[in-house]
Image (cartoon, rainbow, N blue to C red; front, side, top):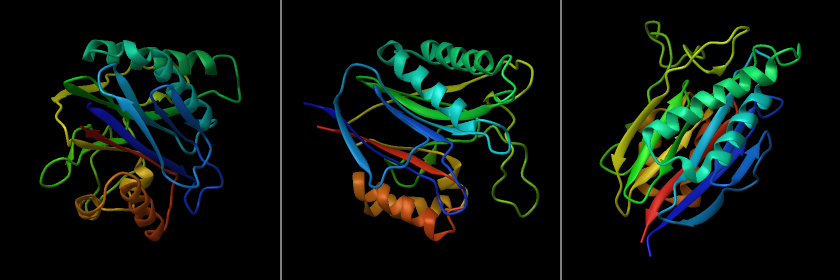
Length: 246
């Protein structure tokens, strides 16, 4: 019977004093805490399964509150996420919820988060994002980014930027979003990496690709985390490996 294997972890990194990332895998959420080891969950292929990370915006209040709210919302939508339209509607509802939670609460004003993830359907995968967290296709020859970074143009000589051009929440007044959602066919053996920029900023795509050519599931997640730590671990690191088995 075809199945979905999801291996995930979330870690503070070496510089931050707390974790503002959150994670959702189906009905399971991990919010603002740390996994000591990669955790692997198995699900039957068929019912829509959402796998996503949310990265609270640094330098603004309550990033961990915003990211937790978003992944819990996505978990609650769960099996209803069966089309691109349903995913866009869910992300717009998440944006509404972040602003509603911040309304009238000085401690939460302008809190925001990025989000990126995938909904695994019986025969296809819906990749989505708002912000600069990423979804990467690790199936074929070479890693391929399927999400779209919401970031301003990079300065000469720069590979990364901490700035985002849209997020869920993140402003004092409501700002609408334009979610990125794409559909790809799905086959046994397909692999995807969903992660926050705590992985992709310090570790180059070539280095990620090299690790994923050698490792799978729990070992892959561990080696990716290790690479981010060895590169200085400058930010929270949250990732999920999605593999279609048979």
